Length: 109
Image (cartoon, rainbow, N blue to C red; front, side, top):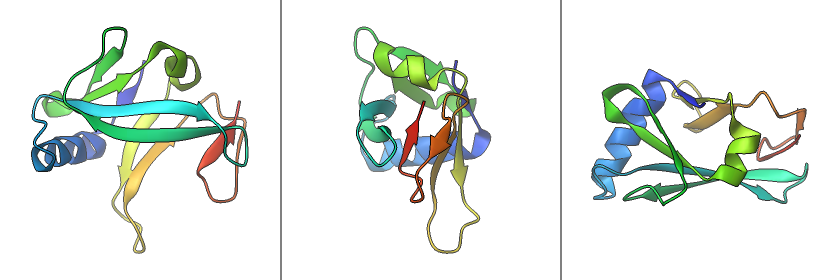
């Protein structure tokens, strides 16, 4: 299961309108690589793929995750950091991440 905070839901819905993908969702995947072994990827998709798990936040915001990535993301909380003065971004509180690299772009499981 993926928990989507209200802040993340709000941003997902706004971005889907901007991307002309209303009814779609945010795709989150895990790929091999990065300083620590695994990295996150984010993309806007118009619809879920056949084997995706679909998680829904407030106001119908959707997150799509493929089965392989879900093994490393199950139990994660997706949030959106609006309080950083330098940049705003999605954040993942992943219980499977044993450590993260200094830049925060990758993790080890």
